[in-house]
Amino acid sequence: MGSISYQRIYAVVRQIPEGRVATYGQVASLAGLAGQARQVGYALHALPDGTAVPWHRVVNASGGIRSLPGGDLVQRGLLEREGIRLDPRGRVPLARVRWAPRRKTIR
DNA sequence: GCAATGACGCTCT
DNA sequence: CAGAGCGCCATTG
Image 1 (cartoon, rainbow, N blue to C red):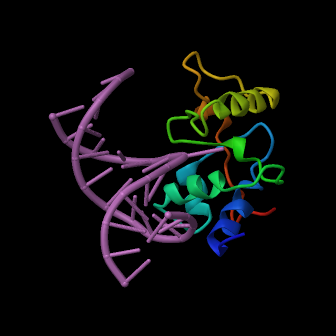
Image 2: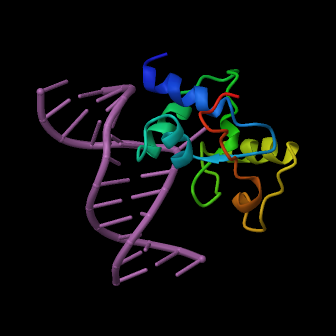
C-alpha cells in the first residue's frame, strides 16, 4: 500500500454494512479527508482486486455509479445482490440506503 | 520539484 | 435535466 491516507479510506469503507452505501464525500469526511472526495475515488481505483473492501458500496453524491468502463455493471450487480434496487435511471436510492455512521465509526 | 491527472462535489448557467 | 467551471490535493510521469 502506498500511503496512510489510503488505509484510512479503506478502514472507513470496510465499515459500510451490507445493504447500505456511502458517498465518496461521506467516506472522505469520515476518513478525516473532508473535501477530498477525489482522493477516495483515487484510492479505490488503486484498490487491488480480492481485497476485503466493499468498494461497490461507495457511490457518488448523485447515487450514480461510474468506476471503470464495464465495471459499473459489476458494481450494479453486487449492489442488487445485497438487496439494493436501483432507480429507473440506474442510480442508488440514497434516501433509503445511505449509511449512517455510528458515531466514531467502528462499532 | 513541477505539471498533468483524476471511481468526486458543488454552484451557476 | 445537461453542461461548464472551479475547488481540493495525493499520486504519477
